Image 1: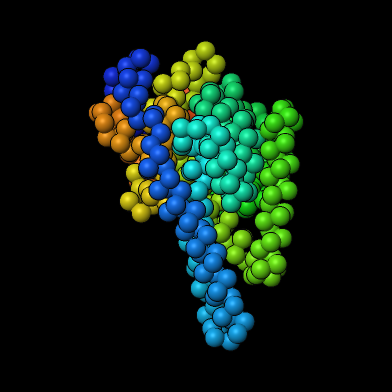
Image 2: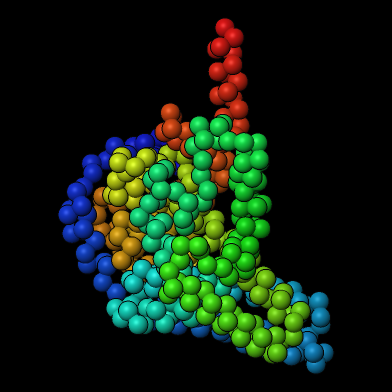
Length: 361
């Protein structure tokens, strides 16, 4: 995101809470038709791909399809299913906010089903994610449901080991490839220490459901085909999901302040990006690129986010970030409190070198 554009966005006139609430009121109402159509075209597509893979592997076993061709098609179909899982996770995400459907029970039931597909315990994730919304952009309340972010001062005062682990976790291969797989396959299998009984039960129940689902699929497909399919799906879904989450809050002129300075409206509109994606990617990502609107009011279901964004210039003045400009965010690793922006390790190195020259002079 270009600094000039973001800075211009920050100069826009701010609206009071009552003003923006009146703007979003009509869009926070769930729409049963849009919601269930999204369920059908998303979960139906995932089921359809699994069925297609079953017949493909049966044809491979009968010699009707060559092994090499069959495995290539398997991987390609699994990659496509991974994109649908991103969309399924957005449904899961909206259910967690209680925004996808009008009925609380329906949201919880659908949330469990989509959580099973994405290997994520519903109530535990819902609890952690609510903390993310309540603390995003607040330096005094980091650490839950966000990406580990240090300030320049904190980094420079850290031990060598802490610096090493921070740089390691911020490495793109770790952050966007290994990290997502570790998150969904391993970390989501355990409860947070401060989790309450309902959140803990959701983890245990989800782990049991995953074992049953996996055992059933292994019985149908065999272990190796199931493993290849599941790993491919979750690699595509996990890496895409973490990337989307990363660019939503880790851009140059993001919003980070301490404690009493933190403001909910400002954090939403200046600390959450507008990721303008091509229509097909916007569809697979469930409109979550309109993240400024989502953080302003998480009760707006994903199928209404674009409508809300286009409803008033207040939302449209948020500077967009596209795929090419979003790639710059990979280099932003630390929050510089003096410059009030995210910087990279190379920028920090240059700053320290200049400081040494000034001191020597």
